[in-house]
Length: 228
Image (cartoon, rainbow, N blue to C red; front, top):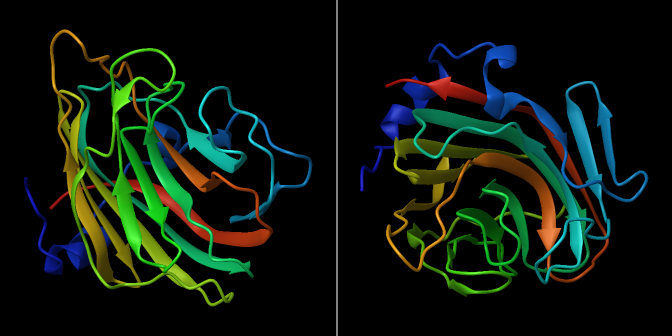
């Protein structure tokens, strides 16, 4: 695994990026639909609120997410998702805040960045082996830290650095207010018995197994292609 030293992050943040219209991973739309008023946009700010899950498959009941255009699984390049996040809710339910998806129905996607009930981050992924929930669970090689996500409305800078290596492989680092929160790698096996991803795209918002009331404000959200 290629771990990117944290002192490179400052360089990455200042790197030249593709224009938004040229970067498919920075073109966003509502994913699968959502309850009326649960996803709103005000300038560069998006606000997510409780919604039923309108996507097919899976066992999660709540979803209010936006998603990008697609790239091929053999795509190579380093991309930085960044947004200033403010969340307010009264229950510490686990939820997903960012994903790399391939359109599968059932099983966890190639990457789900989860906020646990204690505020720490977890990276989760499954290998798909068949229809529905046929999969090998929780395969992501990862390291998490003691950095904790706040749910009291205070703004926090969330950054997810993805390094696509080709062959449906990638490395990931998650940072919160410039501090490393989690990092890991996705290395899907090849051959009979495994369903290969046909494309990748990003998702952002709130995705959870159980319904709970919340408001998540995402400001100045963008995805940039960056270079060391």
